[in-house]
Image (cartoon, rainbow, N blue to C red; front, top):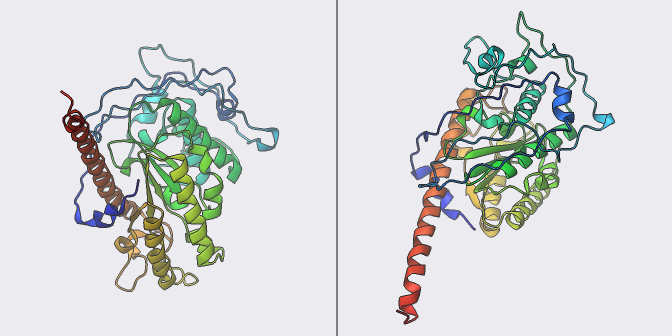
Length: 379
């Protein structure tokens, strides 16, 4: 369905929606991350218990089973990761969490969230094995697997490849597809800007699946859309193009790829709202912001022609000269914490508009169905 009404999203005000706290972690802590991925005796994810959700913006807390699906394929020999870790402590009774797991979930102002792609990769891998979706866990979860803290035995690992990232995202999507139940689902598709969206800033009211990969361009995104084709999203947010510009792609190539992305998503997810987000400004001299603004104008037209929505986030990030605001970036391209706060606000407003529109459509269809017997002359 088309969502041109999102063009007026900036007229709305939105606030943080309340949701239940994230579920606790299971007591069984695996002993190596490689074993996490290669586990072959795990049972399938159990679907969430379906519950009536009224209104649609209020959901139950997501809860997956504690094991990976037995359908999950292991790493191939060429995908070997060098990993070392300490032996796992004896599992605690089922009625309580191990102290180490309690510490993982306890907020710690002295610890930081993952700061590198490798750390984020292993955090998400650990969450997946634990039967959790990482977007619903505290940012500092599973520190024993990725943090390099004084006094702890940190992991030693190599940087995950692009292919390994693709496979991890596909496994997360499969887990969500099997465990979504009646919960709403929103999906972020893009590059490093989407990848590093803080989970604590994702709008409440739905599950979130993050399908961003650092450095990816529109062509790469197009080729991996099948990774989440079995999910049932309410909304899919697409942000792509900045890496294409950095890599020398033409405007025509970028627009053609995004057109194919929207068409493919509408084909695989006919009931989902597809939202094309504007390309953000930069402070990089080799990428003229004038060109980005022109591209965004064409993206808005493209989205309307393809029956998708268009969300203008560019204007929120531009200063008076059209450059990326200094307070919203860390390096002239990537976003600061304040930058993600601004993006969060835009997504909250979009989510509110979409939820309101869907409720109105349901109400209209309900009234229409109730009048059918009367209009047909039946008693």
